[in-house]
Length: 239
Image (tube, rainbow, N blue to C red):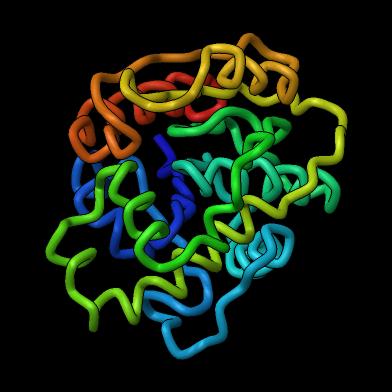
């Protein structure tokens, strides 16, 4: 069986190292390729991007020469929007398509990222912004309460939230690609928001609720990895 590449796209504040534990859960048949954006990880000296389209173009430039091999795409939270936009760009450029899309922690790209009456999170004062980050879980208090560490991470997080909250969705033809969506049982995501992913694929959407808050993925790495591996290895083209 051919090895399958799994491109893992960053959630807000993440670098390629954020998926280190996740990558260890797969068998050798899955080659996990986490992607770094400018301003973090191996690219921390580069200027941050604050636009989802620019982020997508950056990711595409990194992976475009690897699309001739079997692959799937996984994204969590911000990574789901980037995964959607990346897939759309891949199709527009007539590149080989992913065999499967895996998204967790977010409704579809058409949902409002900032509800009416709410202030955009990336514009919040520092204390309010950090309090909002705490609500999501997944960020150790040791980082959130350390001024020097937050001096580094806060601009990254604000840039990522800006890219999400200023994104303007444009309707396009649905993909003919299977899509799996996973959400946490304690997330502030409605079933209706999750089901908006169905508009983006001609195939039947698959959905699963996992116990936990927004960063439930770190409590269920083994289960999520098993699910992804089973789905991408059962596709007959890889037999």
